[in-house]
Image 1 (cartoon, rainbow, N blue to C red):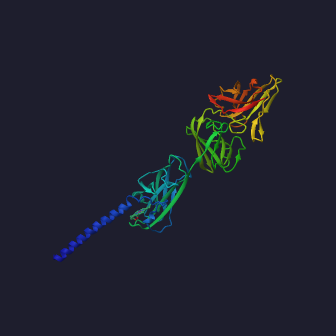
Image 2 (cartoon, rainbow, N blue to C red):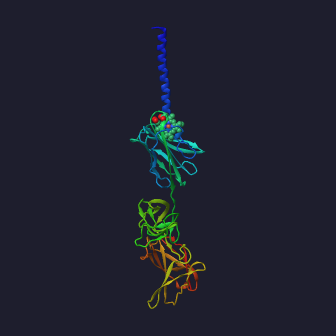
Image 3 (cartoon, protein in one colour):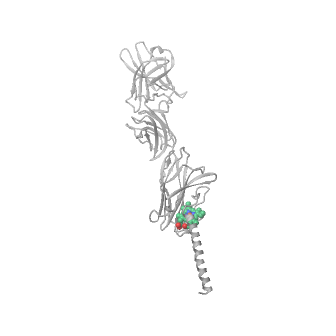
Amino acid sequence: MSIRSKLLKLSIISFFCASFVIYLFIGSQVSANSFPGPIASVTGAPGEGTCAACHGGGPGGGNLTIGGLPANYTPNQEIIITVTLMQAGGQRYGFELTAIDDSGARAGDLTPNDNRSQLQLNSVGGNVRQYINHTFGGTSPSGSGVGSWSFRWKAPAQSVGRITFYAAGNAANGSGDPTGDSIYTKSESIQSLTVFASVSAASFAQTLASESIAAGFGANLADGIVHASTVPLPTELGGAQVRVKDAAGTEINAGLFFAAPGQINYLLPPNLALGPATITVRRGGVDVAQGIVQIVQVNPALFSANANGRGVAAANVFRIKASGEQTTELLAQFNPALPGFEPLPIDLGPDTDQVFFIGYGTGLRNNPTGATCTIGGVNAEVLFVGKNNFFEGLDQMNVRIPRSLAGRGNVDVVCTLAGKTFNTVNIAVR
Ligand code: HEC
């Protein structure tokens, strides 16, 4: 073999060796780019680029969706999200997603469900955002012409208002270079549930009893102002429903008396477990507002004529005359100058008249024994506590008005039931 051919042979070997080294080098670059997934912060969210910074030139015509998002979230709610990228003919598919609030800060926690996705953190505009994106294994198609990734998201412990999910996807041709790939972006927002604050419709106390009447306040709760016109009460009024989930996890639709955008009056279902209950307003099939209220056995409350839990009672006077004649009288009158209701003084009549205060309340019926009352500081005999059978959720209390109150004018009615004090209302005695 001539020197020339030896040299030629050596150079061919070294050419192959060099090629092999170069091949390894390129190969490791390709895997360095594709194996760990995409870089962080290319979801198209504010302050970020997209995968199109590097990839492009593909046929397009596909679409990217973010599935599984509810319209509203509650604190710590956990959901499964599925990002799906469809494009016919793709060989490898990839994605990245982040969840941020309106200030651009990370919202909630993303967690991979399997080895098709993984997490990264990266700072954008001073906010450390969390990213979930494909692993190398996760670039393989999930079916013909589709790549998809499912993972979990947990809502923040406190409501942060609107949360937007930004996703970018790449339907790639698998060529090993970033050309011939189609990039898609998608964003979806969810809102936190607004507050639904429930109180006793009589006393405005913040605890409630089973089978009592509650008033719940919020915003955009119902389509209009609608009153119930049927008994039993409807469970939907003005497009709104109220669901009560008690501490034992039992969920029941409440009967509704009245629904308006800012207020819904409802009847708590019977036999609720004591402890915190979650009250959710659903409007047009979507949960819109929520609140938590403590369920107690009795929550004694008397209605007032001005429907604010104070002042003159929403009550009647019941009189039994010596002749046996019985009358029911008013004890409040409307004063347009206030405007509002004021006491109409009660005439106790001759000594032979028996005169009773018939107070209307709610939250009494579950333990109606052992009630006490004073009127104007004088002990008054309680003759009856329990259901008023004419109106759902309404309870009644019959109390003898002591004759010693004659001439006292305005006096407070202060009662207790099961060790709990009612809201104070008043009457006037001539
Ligand atoms: C900084 C540049 C860069 C960005 C930004 C980038 N990639 Fe890539 N990506 C690459 C390179 C380089 C490769 C390796 C060449 C290739 O395979 O296309 C690659 C590979 C891939 C592959 C494998 C493709 C195949 O053909 O085998 C997928 C899928 C992919 N990227 C998805 C994404 C997605 C999804 C994003 C955005 C969320 C993204 N990439 C953002 C540079 C980038």
